[in-house]
Image (tube, helix red, strand yellow):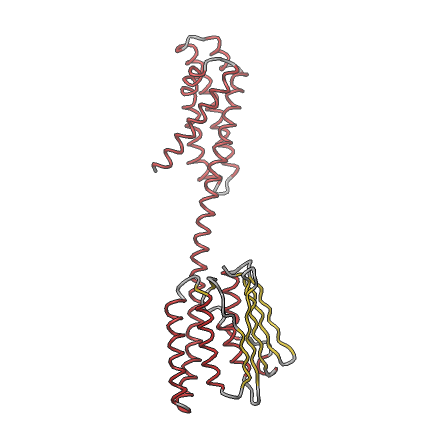
Length: 336
């Protein structure tokens, strides 16, 4: 309320000063012009506030333009008539300039007042509607931000149980086959779980940590797949202080291991490199059986693409190819 009152005081102060400077063309006394404009602006201000807080909200914003035009025109004509006699009273009885006062009750004088009113009404309406637009835009952006945050949390909740289920199932199978490898796998899974619990709530995490988490997952899958798969991994060792959205790359690798498996030998290739401009080029390829995986990329990749759209709208490019027994995902992201 205090802020609004201050804004209105500033507006009327600036308005009176500017109009008093304008009146120097007719009367060369600035302070006298200020005094007269202080006297004149009262009926003007009544119409301005009646228009802003009654007519615009009730009629114009409620899509009743005909009624709005009728009432505002009636108001302008009424205030023009009242102001003309108000100005006449000021000049005739306060500053003893009756001849000048008579001008404002003439047709020409009332046209001058009418012109001033139209300029003032147009100016105040513009400021009012701009303020309303700004507040609406800010509110819309806040709602959109909350919606995106909620959607991202839902996407994370979809990723986490999906990953946990696959990992726990792998550990369970390996513990029945080889307890030593199963224990090693359990420790690596513990590191992954720790990363997932403490890092995924952050908007960005260290790319180095994300690479380590990815390496742990790949090592788990190597143990689980044993010698059945030919797995090639090339990940960068020096990543400086780059940041990335957590758990963004893992679903792509997870998808490769899920769909590469077949009855015979299968292969997976994972590579990443970072350009001098800090652009990550992440490529994951895997063999697949057409009848099983053709046209099916799973919930993991669907969530990755949606998260990329939300978090990297103009700084990513993802290409998914599925042909001739090879499934390939090529992701490029501009890292920070």
